[in-house]
Length: 90
Image (cartoon, one colour):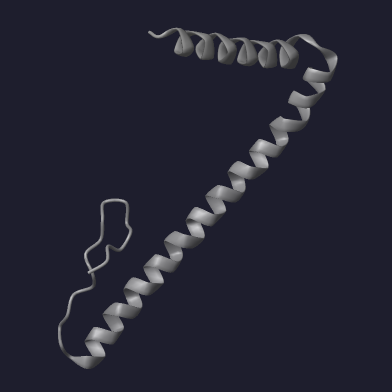
């Protein structure tokens, strides 16, 4: 390890350690943790809500594609989907 990387790692460790010490061993840090916890839980619920909305939109788009191809009678297949459920560009 070069000297500059060692110094950077030491400084980063000191900053992280100082932040953890502040959050766990000072009254203001404890108060900050009490405020951050509920905010993170709310943010997590919002992310789940967004994910569910996007999943429903993808299902509606898939159904729309099936209706369109059925109405046109070409028997086409929808664009291929990745394992994560995302449509890949053709």
